[in-house]
Image (cartoon, rainbow, N blue to C red; front, side, top):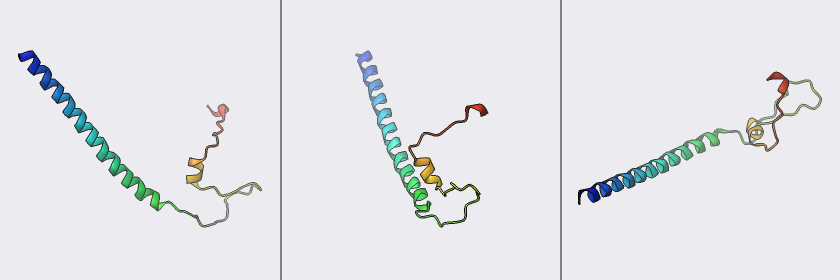
Length: 81
């Protein structure tokens, strides 16, 4: 009778641990989403146009957000490695 009770207790401990971790993950995700929303609301939607700090004729202003989210593959200079 005792081995069955030990297995039951072990199973209940595992289930409660799993439930605790799932609840913790849900709470952390909720807090992280709220914080990311706050940070995203601080990003400029339409940055003011300023003069470029470049003399190249093909220079253009690109927002940091656009450069991070772009799908273009990044070119890596293998000579610098």
